[in-house]
Length: 261
Ligand code: OOG
Image 1 (cartoon, rainbow, N blue to C red):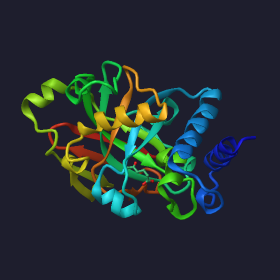
Image 2: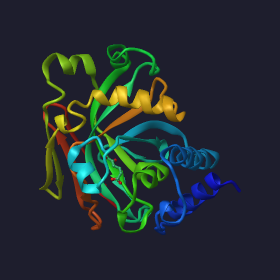
Image 3: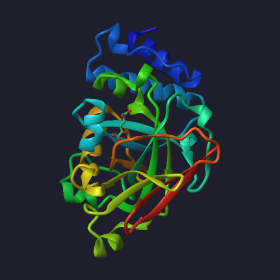
């Protein structure tokens, strides 16, 4: 087994067995390029077992998040249909190790992303926008990692919920997508607040970041892909009480929720 395959296998076992491991970089030198190769290999393992890739996500797009985790670069991960929960649906918490939840903005691509196109043409590929929740769950002990570790671990991607999609052009005609209040509530109590402006200054900047990282690291982002633009706040622990309610609200865009099962 190559080093890349061995590292991917280690993370895959940690994820499927819900058994956290020590950081890959504690025992091996892993650069960012190799970390993306480990991520690619991990996704290939899952696709080989029948999972279907439906989108990509960015991490560390918010200053609060980057500071919380002590890292400084935007990173790209991949999401599969098997990790999506319908809006208002139940999330099985026993799937995870030490899950956290973040309020996000989701974008839906109506056309393939062309990394060579100018930014305004890339933006034209985005058809719809929705509020979203992302569940992150590090496969590393104590949720601690370097940038290469977290990239190899598919940027902690573990699950997501997308609210009602709206036509982007219609939304932009009466809302400033870079200045909407975002609230994360757990059991009716406000856990985190932020603004869509905390996502790269404007969540639509996620499109160019995805185009760049996707082409650099061989991650496809075809028409129909969902993009999670990144968290608007620091992450909150996913509650472990069955029946607990998690709701993210983006002013003007509406709410998205899930219940802990
Ligand atoms: C990495 C993923 C961060 C975000 O939105 O910043 C992320 C992590 O903190 O485990 O998804």
